[in-house]
Amino acid sequence: MTDDQNSARNPRVIPRSEHRISRANISDNALKVLYRLHNAGYEAYLVGGGVRDLSLGREPKDFDVATDARPEAVKELFRNCRLIGRRFRLAHVHFGPEIIEVATFRALDDPNSESNGDRVIEDGLIVRDNVYGTLAEDALRRDFTINSLYYNIADFSVVDHAGGMEDLQAGVVRLIGDPEVRYREDPVRMLRAIRFAVKLGFKIHPDTARPIGPMAELLRNIPAARLFEESLKLFMAGTALESFEALRKYGLFGELFPGVEQALARDTGGTGVRFISLALKNTDQRVAEGKPVTPTFLFAALLWPAVRDAMQGYLEQDMNEMAALQAAAQDAIHDQLQRVGIPKRFSIPIRELWMLQPRLERKGGRRSLRLLGHPRFRAAYDFMLLRAEVGEVDPEVAAWWRDFQAGSDEERQTMTVDDAPRRKRRRRRRKPPAAAASPTPSAPSE
Ligand code: ATP
Ligand code: MG
Image 1 (cartoon, helix red, strand yellow):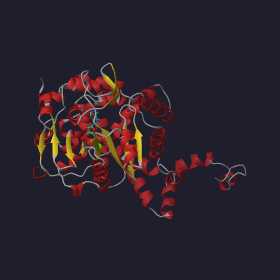
Image 2 (cartoon, helix red, strand yellow; image 1 turned 90 degrees about the vertical axis):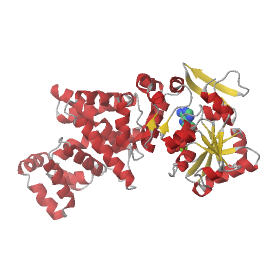
Image 3 (spheres, protein in one colour; image 1 turned 180 degrees about the vertical axis):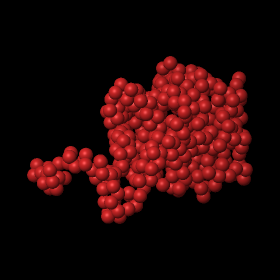
Image 4 (cartoon, protein in one colour; image 1 turned 135 degrees about the horizontal axis):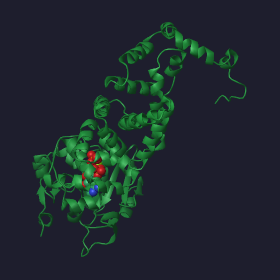
């Protein structure tokens, strides 16, 4: 019998007086859900990140609830409830912007289990998993011991079947059960191990860490959309730089961003790594200051070394700069979509941001004024500043744009007329004044 099975028989029950979780720190909506389930005669527990983070004195991102009520029964209890998920059937109880996720206890993959429902496993990967079970079973099919603590609304105790409280106190991320089996069931657990270790400042237990490198390839079986969601969690939570470094250390970054990893390996000067690191440090700083961060800027930065690398190849084939960049951008996005699917609403602006780079590098001239009004100008400018910091762009260009933005209309005029040879060239190309001044009748005013 394994330790895990042993602990399933003897859960540690930590009474209210011996843990840090207080109802004062649980969201009112989560409490509402817990109490309503409890009053209807069901078991109801707060579980997962909520219990983990509260035990550490941190503020949870969201609250998850586990119960013995079936999803349909949960739906009966809450008007504002939707059943979602195919792989796992879950109830989402909506309170305005807050969603409380309610999951019915699920069983382990045990053919002798008393429980019922259906589970589909293909090549060791769980593709559907609606086998209902008991709390003890549910506890052992969760990923990490620290994610398997249950706060019982009936008596405010914490139920620990997997040794999670000890690991929480020791600062250890440890998979429940046999790590190889657990990674094969769901390779995303490798990314989650990194994410929790980075987020909490924990160590990954050696047994949990060891198979990650050798099994990293399994991430290729995961749908690109799920990996996009997971990447956002890794890179938009304020610990992007550490996540990047840990992902590379464990050989996972190359699975998510193969083109970038190859470019970084070829880039002997290390500019690519410095550029990404700087961008991620910036992102983390913004998160720390409560400023918004966008997937557009983030992915534009992460993929940039791959774009630069591909662009070099096209330039060597005598393509002009814009054409080479266009082709390289196309390649980078196309390759990336095979792994981490970036939705179109981001990939289009990402490309725009890149295509603005050569235009920004040609400072001066009337076009500069027009660029200022471009919806993507600010992001492209910030992007260029990072490039300047790693030596990709002349610092004078960056300084010129800074002054140009800060200047009054008049000052801007003088800044543009300074550039005599450019002005001449542009003048030759300029449209006739009449056409430029008033819109043609056929142009609709939207
Ligand atoms: P956070 O919300 O802070 O990112 P979390 O631990 O709450 O962290 P969720 O993704 O919200 O993570 O999942 C809630 C819980 O569901 C987890 O704590 C874990 O117990 C369980 N869980 C989530 N994903 C998996 C998985 N891939 N395999 C096994 N259990 C999982
Ligand atoms: Mg959560």
